[in-house]
Length: 280
Image 1 (spheres, one colour):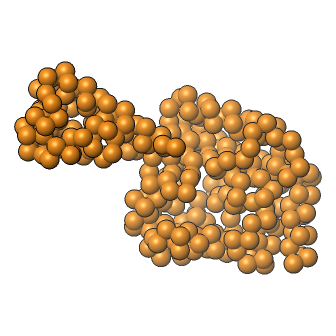
Image 2: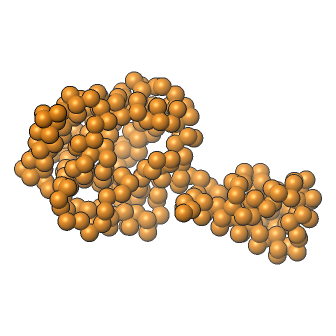
Image 3: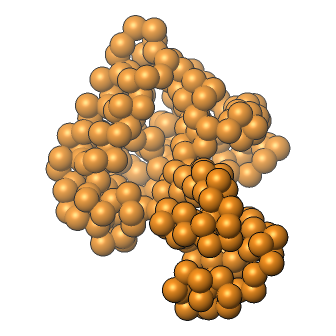
């Protein structure tokens, strides 16, 4: 199954092919004009290679339509900024990504999110965050800047105590049970969640295993003031600001929220997870 990134690259390739055929050029003729191998033209047109800005400018000139360069570069910027691979994002380590989160959060009043396999970063204890980040450093082979990243993640949590902020979070019960850390660290994390249940800026819903659900749990995502969605997959992080996409994720959040328990019921679900740890 192709990703949205790949589909966008294929669409850009189709537009490149359209411009070439409108100019009455074959792929080999265009390649010769630009001093490229014919295989490069083929790869770009078939969405097998991501063009550079210079490639697009050369293409626009090569087909005798230099004004099309602006359109082509706009298409490229659109899908490159939306889908950010972890390999590229974390090339300099995890701290920079955590600090980017601080900046985004500082511009936001209402945050809604859902996590299904891990406790949300905004609610994590330092010990739990350290365990999670270490696991992903191992998985992705990224620079080991875990301690600065943990410190930045803790700074993000200062927003929880700022008047006027709203954090509406959904957590699937399974995330309360995942032993991505030592059992004693998870116990401390669950105690932290209990403490957040009474915080005025936080609305924390737990979706129990046995709850009827209209849609199944999927990738975690966060909605910022109805203007931006950030969603993570194994290989990339998507930053989506298209109104239709934000509306879709809002509908997904509202649908999941129908299955969530709050207040005393949420407290009991956290207690149930903690009791399971005590039996280990």
